[in-house]
Image (cartoon, rainbow over all chains, first blue to last red; front, top):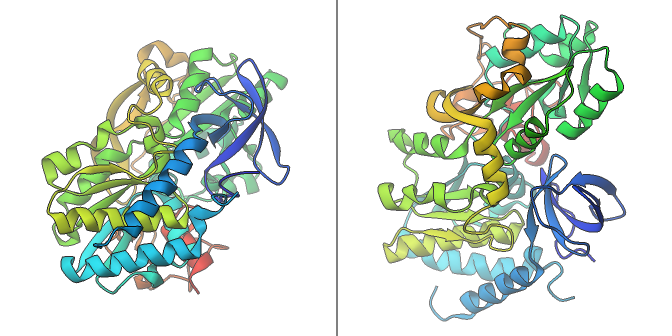
Length: 81
Length: 359
């Protein structure tokens, strides 16, 4: 399941289904599959990438996403504003 | 998974807004500027402005790459389209007004203009139709430039060339700081541009201009958290550069993408619609790639270009000086179905976003 839901955004996170050289088959969520170019990132099957105009520009780290939420919780639970 | 939709979680949002309200008492009136069409979309779509206390204002800067393409560059690509060259482009460029005609209007009178999802799709078309000349109209900021650069580097087929209209975001942010009556108190820097560039280009804002800067993601709670972090910096009196979007933006950016941009492009002065000339704000093909440059290949005449249609206020909207609904033509003469100014054309244009979401 996609950690980020579907984002209407020029660069959307996609799940890597398979990789073949510089091309990967990715799932944009809800079964929307497309071939994208992954030559700019070192992405493996099972990772999420940010795709912009058919090219993956960055890998999204699931553990970083969890870490961000943890930081937020800490900030929000702290006493002072 | 509990985290699944936490970036959109209402309870989270309420907590952040509560903190923002607490800080607003200390900071007084503040104005933050983002420079990304997708940030404006997130803010408008999720109604985030309605959650913020009256002290906090968020304005949209020049964050739409399509909106800042000057008429002269549209004229150049229309020139090619009308001379039998197949023009390939992203969908939102189609209706951007040129001096006399948009690409869509050129298509209506018979030009072969094709919308592509990606530059690689355009190259595939050129391979399939070797008897036709193809041009890709390369519009976009640092997020799109690497894809163009990759294909230039790979060497497209003989019948393919590029008309480059790429622009860089940091010079536009710097310009906003020089507009006296704008008086911005902090930047929400664009997350996906930063995914490519890394943190480096933004260091100057807190260091040289003492401007709080937070690189923000695009989920509603990302945006609220970015606002909170900016207010926290202001309340502490310590402007710095923070990265709220760590799950995507690494400090070094994407080194491969930066390298291919450096290999293929020179950084030069660029003209922005509604803004004017900005130093070191445009990418142009290096000399060794001249044979892929449509400008020289087809000897396109350089025109002055008429950027502004009568009564159009896009030049003020684009720098955040006025809001879309302060333009007399907004949703009257100028609508998403029949746009007059560039800001109403693209999905990322501030007027388009407002027209579609704020009614």
